[in-house]
Each structure stands twice: as C-alpha cells, then as structure tokens.
Length: 142
Image (cartoon, rainbow, N blue to C red; front, side, top):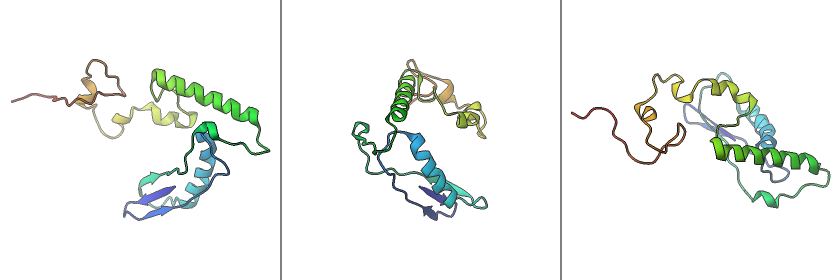
C-alpha cells in the first residue's frame, strides 16, 4: 500500500497474507493497519494505491488446518451473488454499507458543477455507466 503526497514523495508499506484470498473483506483489515501507519492527518495526499502480487486462481486457494470451511463457503456464496448482480445490473448495484455516503451524490456532480453534455446525450445501447467507444461531437458547429 502506498500514499503519495502532493510533493510527489511516496511512502509505502508491504504486508504478506498468510494465504491467498479472493475476498476483499479479508484484505481490508491488513490494509487498514498499513493505512493507519502511513497516514498523517496534517499532510495532503494526491494518490493512494494498493498493489497485489503473486495472484492465483481462486480455485487453488488452500485453507489452513484451523480455518472454518463453512465460513469461507458462505463468503464465497455471498461474493458469487454479488458478482451475478453486478453482471446483470452494473458494477455499482451492490455496495458496502460503509460506502453509502459516497453514493448519495453522483460522482460527476461532486464539486464539478453540471453534468457534461456527453453524459446527457447517450447513444443507443449506452447506459449511464457504460459508454460506447465512439467519438461524439457535441455542441453547435459554426
């Protein structure tokens, strides 16, 4: 995990998980500890980041001898359900309760003013979250 200050100096910490995981909820605790060590409330930051390495398919995950398989199986079912909902209704169909405040005001309206013309003028087949990669000229031509 890293934090980059406004002067472009980057500070980072590294952690190794005890086993591979496919579930963000298992990573968040580790990230919270790293963030608490790095973050200084008196400092302005321009970027944050998390880098994951040594990725493996989630069907290869080996449980330890003392882990509860039923708990992990329930977590797998929850994440499978979220993946299905996201595939059907879009990636923000399901959000964590902790991020609800961020979803109250549409992101494109936060401190930026009006909705852009491109967001207002959708082409057939486009949704609010997914635009076709076709250049569009909006506005009046003189």
